[in-house]
Length: 387
Ligand SMILES: Cc1ncc(COP(=O)(O)O)c(C=O)c1O
Image (cartoon, protein in one colour):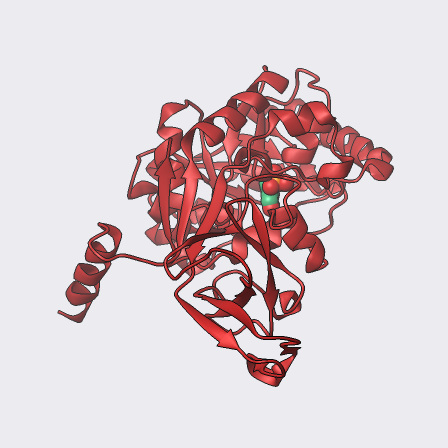
């Protein structure tokens, strides 16, 4: 009964019967363009879109819906929860790259799921289910996070042979520093180790169908060598470069179309007298009579406390400094002297790479990377697909 009530509420919310102040626009044409751009760069690879972490903040359901217009073997996610979300909108098979509690595997729908494995225990758990399960073996080529070392491959294959219903469909690895040109040797060495692992697997009589190593950075850097036939594309799918825009080759930056715009609006205006303090801690003090605007965006939605008195939002191309401390669900911006009223639309995140409120600049201000900013965008904020 309670669950039904929650679902009814959710339906009302999702079906847009309730208005929201904050809105994230996700550009269909940008996502498809980026997909095609990477396909052009790697014509011999399937592009497997990575939709984990709410599709890098873009909305998993929305991006899965857009991608129905392209054909590929797998959508890549981290957890079974995300796989279930994908299947709300499409029956597209899913590759699960994250580890799951062993006790959960018995409940998985393996008819449209492949799982990345790198622990003998996982092989045993999956094998003992007695079902046909597609697995992708992860090789540790230097990231030292997940994966088996090349020297352990033979032993792993020996265990795998005990479970004929487990199909070794893929072999994969993950690059440690593909976004760092000064570490090209590391990336190259990882590729060589991966090729060695593949050779061992083939020599032991296995014939996997897919070999995938690259993420966005690798896809842009590593030449196709006719062995790899899939890439797991995350950040690039959303039109964001793994390198700062100043350091990204012009041709790449032109090829990428950022897909996300975060809109909010002024929900209230406040007149300050000289000497008035603003927000928690009074870290901004008005030096004259001035007008400020209230935004329903705080550190829950996407901002951080670090952006207090430092970040920017924009109104029709004009930048408005954030003033005072960022609150949990609110922040304030300086609209003094601007013709801005309650209800006016404010851009919180701009798709323009060089804007002061681009995801790159927000990340820089926070001494982090665009990935972290994007995935921080709160899930309940409504995402709409445009163009
Ligand atoms: C295993 C794996 N593959 C691919 C990706 C996608 O990486 P990127 O967003 O750099 O394309 C990730 C991202 O975290 C990952 O963990």
